[in-house]
Length: 313
Image 1 (tube, rainbow, N blue to C red):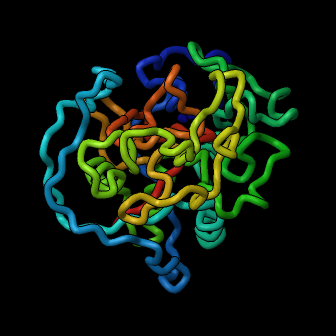
Image 2 (image 1 turned 90 degrees about the vertical axis):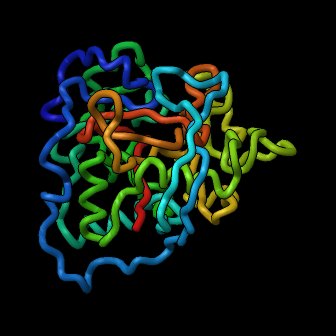
């Protein structure tokens, strides 16, 4: 986002609008969120807890499966070698973000620009009345004034009872700001996929190749007919608590589904920043990007109701 909401967002179909709606005038902003963070006494920054140490080493990254969109750049499958690193067991929660905002006074891009994208079935009545535009090619995204991490469904909504849900409406810039404060960083794309695989080789999901083994839901994705009917068979319509499902083999929770997570990398080819993991809106009829190798991208200052992040070290 680079300014007030325009009347009719256009273009950006290449950004997979179901996955990562972009502000039509957004850019890969040079002035990052980290540069906007006020100086914070180290004693007020959080301790580096809840990070899982991973050994690194060589793994097979990517996929050549039939579900891969050739424009997404998932393939070919190739060996990648990583140094040891740490990664958070969960996405950053509303409680974690609230502590950061309170300590620093930081305002997200969505707060500064005065709007963000909200999925049409989740928007509050007031937000629906005030919505100024929908996204071309994806009318289920509403441009809602005053939607941000504090009011994720628009005016009248709150995260008061969702302290352990992932924070959303977070841009790449915002994520960098949190990392600068907390002494962490965003994971690289390769680190993210290594972590998501949980030690499995070539599997579609963090737990294996079957989406619902023994009929059990392992991720928060769309159930029903997208984008109008969500049966919530997995127990959730919007975001779920960050530990709602069992972890993968590395002890990491919800590496796919729930929210898209920013990575540090730039999208290649082209501009934008990488997002991984899919979200509660992913459905195989439209977007099956809840696989460990799936990827998408967006501009650094864009935000929406299903995008957040986790930290690495």
